[in-house]
Length: 368
Image 1 (cartoon, helix red, strand yellow):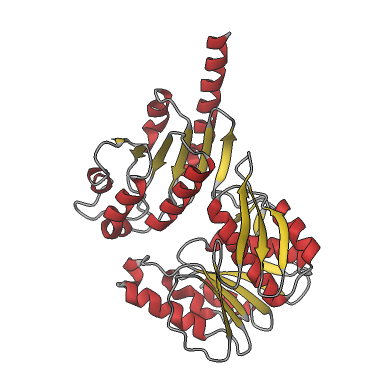
Image 2 (spheres, rainbow, N blue to C red):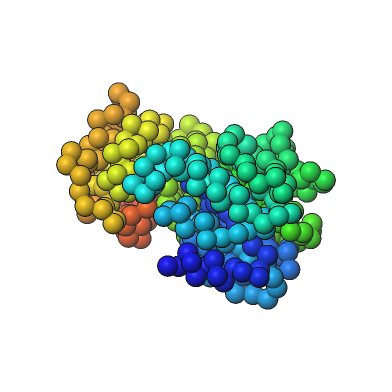
């Protein structure tokens, strides 16, 4: 398995691992970029395509290895990191684990495998069974008080954020993150914390934060104009949806938010349909498409309608086949649109972008 190979490759390296049921791909990719620019280089295995590197594989000189530690199928238990981040330990992959307690137990085992003298950086509020007395434990968050956090946070006109990064021993002032989104400020804090443990150049880290260009399908903007916004994101867990929607609300206050959501897996929909409905109810309009099955066969009675029926009363909602998305959007007054899901909904991104550009051209012609 890939996870066993990764465990073998990481032997003899200084391993900087990022684990968590959400947020790990962006955090890992940030850590890899920060390490390249401000930490002296090294290699990385990422869970998505980095826009800075143009790949999910980074090869470089030096002992440092940044790794995305995936909890699926307990893959991350092949790793023995020197420093590790845990972003979340929510109930997920219950088709593999069975219960949330089993998920948390796997994370406890992962943390116990951090090498003696190493460090754990865990998100504030995430409770883990810590069985490793030979490591240092730190907490991070979006803002204080904790060991690592952002301070004096401001939203810029283009949706990016400027802030001070606070470490246990210093403050890095006036950092401007190269990509928008409140959730990404928190990911940046976690990635910077990994660099703090390993060592970094202050000036170069500020440059790395500003030049970070993101991960494909993670808060990925295709249209960002005063009158219309379109973003695509891989979010496929209720908490990920809630984080993405919260970031958009903060960036575009008072704007109408429309989502096209493709649920991922029948088991995940069965286990979390009410949570999905609660998260999606934070939007103004929801368009649901059929479940993406991935590795699963259908479960009787489990369809997108479970989510549809549990959306809050009064929200504008509809269901369609994914092939019908464009026809439905043609008749919408789009202000802020987001496509969400871990399936194949991203196949429709180019056509959706093209349709929005047609709308813009039609509006110009009408005004003239």
